[in-house]
Image 1 (cartoon, rainbow, N blue to C red):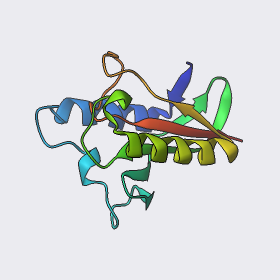
Image 2 (tube, rainbow, N blue to C red; image 1 turned 45 degrees about the horizontal axis):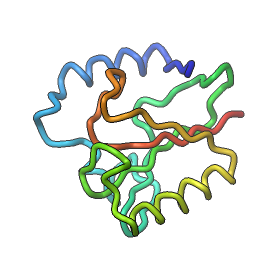
Image 3 (cartoon, rainbow, N blue to C red; image 1 turned 45 degrees about the vertical axis):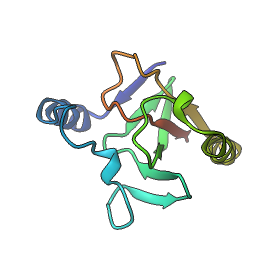
Length: 125
């Protein structure tokens, strides 16, 4: 994966990571209707705008960067129950059909900054 943020977003993200200890409340668990990042939700998931979006992804310019977040605080897709798994796949398929790339890091990834499972939806121009 080759992705970059704008200089301003990269700097803000760095500060954000330094100031947000993973032992404190999860920032994704607070994303609900009324939050500036909120896009929509389903029974078990919230779709949100990435607060620090990529400007390029695999050599292309990013037009939209969203994420799907389980409402339950889970660290891995394997923790989804059968109903949640079906709903997740339906939502991911809809976004993929609308031109979004789909990307998620493993729970063990050192590059994963938030321990709450999240899958990126990235649309290119």
